[in-house]
Length: 119
Length: 116
Image (cartoon, rainbow over the protein chains, first blue to last red):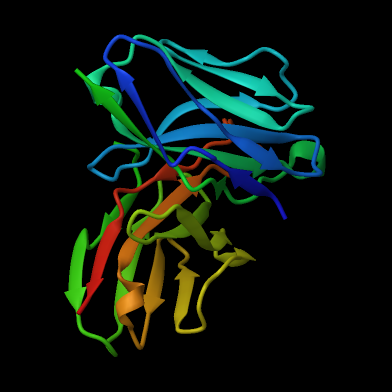
């Protein structure tokens, strides 16, 4: 079974600084997606960034970027120029793609990292 | 707005009771997923439906059941409720395979259940 591990229950960063959230996963599959979701106090689940495993290039979305190390099964999220609105729980998630890319499985989530942003 | 609608947003009930949570997926999405998030916990997968059929089952208790109807909305039924069932229940949907699919799930705002 696939597992996702976030080893940092809590992280903090000063406004305008950079912070990196860690995530490792375990799978025997070769084709899959990885995601970072943000859950602010409103509890809404918001997609931050996605990475397809077959792509070697790291995904980037504005101030958010990932460091995807497939061999090491590592998927960290870097937030640059942190803003107060970035304060939230961040979840790393894995989703396998079945052979042939014809169907997708469930999302498997890590336990989350609470990010605090100090003004 | 993700396009996924969940009702009710909040529900308070007593132990031993039964409740039904409802989910309407995004237009055109055939897959519906249910997740449970207990206080300060991660999201635990409960069950998945695809076009009316159960596709995958996770850590769903026998007291819980779900179904997806022909119009693709889904209901999660929770019975013989216990204090420990208090949680945020999320529904998520994703497009059918073969359609443009970016792999992500689209989440509703959740139904917060409090069992007293």
